[in-house]
Length: 49
Length: 178
Image (cartoon, rainbow over all chains, first blue to last red; front, top):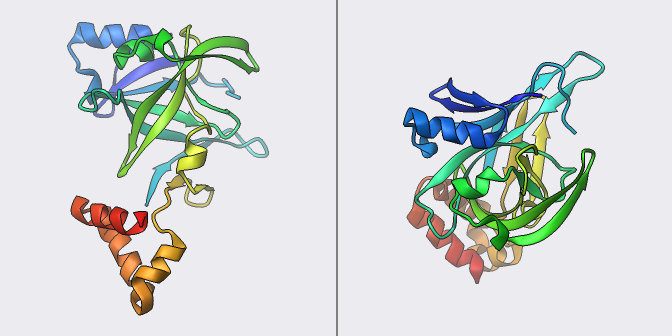
């Protein structure tokens, strides 16, 4: 299974299995949610349908 | 008006696949000042956009205030609630119905319900590796009536300028609304 990531200025600043944990991590790190891009990064070989 | 997103192709021939995503600023329509930048997988096979449960909290939405729905897919069935959020993609700003699941382990998808009405074309340009979404701007009958002999250049020029100047955009919307 891939990871949810928060990307700030091209750099991954938070990563977790589920979106909720990424949002919590952002809060802990002090990032405002509107300055990052949230994305799901599939693991190699993972095929989404 | 259009908005385009570059995409990459993965895999090896003959099993190439496109990982085309839409980058949207999703916002709660009751508070447009706050938004989330989200990469959503462009999925013409999805009847509606989909997101994990925590998106509701993140946008200050009460999950169960949405319209309840059961979604069926390859992974089985998922209970969700349909909410109508704002989605800004470049200069394009639309209302996006999105099913927010009761659970976290679902993908985030840009589905067809909503966008099918709001966009006139989806073009997956596999030469330039670009996904483009087009919104309707002109109503042909109105164009002919309003522009007359200027029709060859007036509306295309106005459409171009509208992407950069809100006042021109507003003028264009007034003209095409007639």
